[in-house]
Each structure stands twice: as C-alpha cells, then as structure tokens.
Image (cartoon, rainbow, N blue to C red; front, side, top):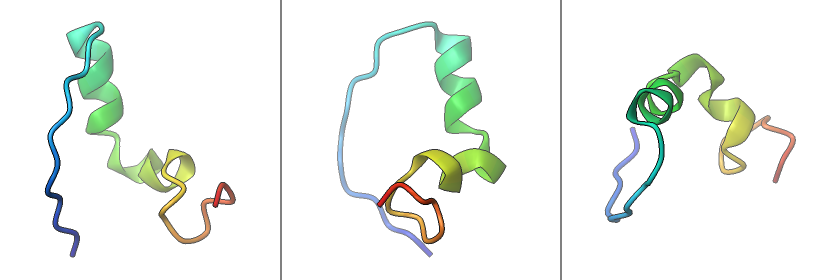
Amino acid sequence: MYVFGAEQSISGDLAAVWSVWTDLPRFPGWDPREAGSGQA
C-alpha cells in the first residue's frame, strides 16, 4: 500500500489528465519508482 503526502497543481485538459491519472494498469510504465519500469 502507498501513502502519498504532497500537493501539486496540474494544468491541462481535465479529461486527458484524469485519463492518465486513473489508468492504473499503465502506472508502472511511466512511474520510475515502480519496480520493473525500466526507467529508474
């Protein structure tokens, strides 16, 4: 389980931002903190 404690403002198309934010299956592909992402 992850616990986040930060605040950030994101500007852009709301639908596009929400689509990326809620695409959990692809999360490890763009988050370098995730094991096996190949971006660390």
